[in-house]
Amino acid sequence: MSSVATYIRDLDPRLKLGVALILGPVLWKVDFSAVIVSLVGLLFLVWPLAVEQPVGAKMVRSLMVFVVFWVAIKMVLDAVSGVPVEFIVMDGAQLGARLVALVLLGLCLALSSSSRAIGLAISWVLRPFIGRERAWRAALSLALMVHFLPLCLEALARIREVASRRCLGSGFRVRFLVVPAALMRNLSQKTWNQTMAIACRGLDTAEAWEADFTWTLRETITLLVSVCLISGLFFL
Image (cartoon, rainbow, N blue to C red; front, side):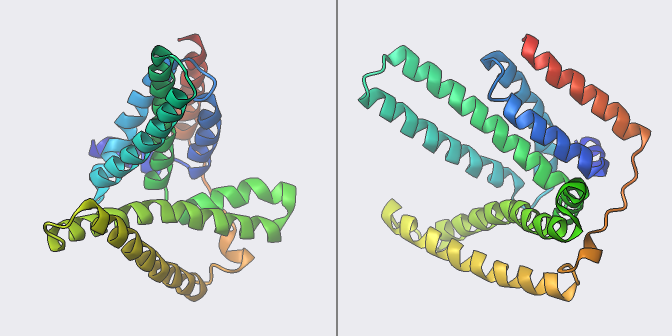
């Protein structure tokens, strides 16, 4: 698993970003069987990256709970609307599988690339279309958004663990009030820390987002394999 994680991390961020942007919409167009195959493949890529994080496994479980919550809402609304039971189960399973695949795809990108690497890739792509000044601002914004995804999940996992140890015997209502409040306070502190870090490191200038990427034979082979695999999803 360590070799898989190392290989994914060493890939060019432009390649990973491009594959993610293509595979995301494809997951909503292909059949259910292709989604299941994609889900298994993405899980094989995400799990080695997650287990190396302090609370990586809990991050994945938290996202799965999020998916189950939205699937349950859809199934309840379908049931209230009078949809037959067999269609409720089928549609719920398809929505859940597609959402899980998308979540794993986002996690794979966030855990395998630093926020700065993703920002440099975005700046490299946008610069010819919107100019140098706008490109680095958009890159910084999107990089911070991607960076906060694992931070939010990690903070949520740690807060839930602390609440389970300190709030012994408390019911669901108490945790429902305590955990979100603690999470918001924790994230507000992280936002201030990130702002100071950006200013101290000089990342609020266009020069800091000048990309210097190197495309190798490994990226070319990975790109060809990815294109073949994504194309093959339409034939499953």
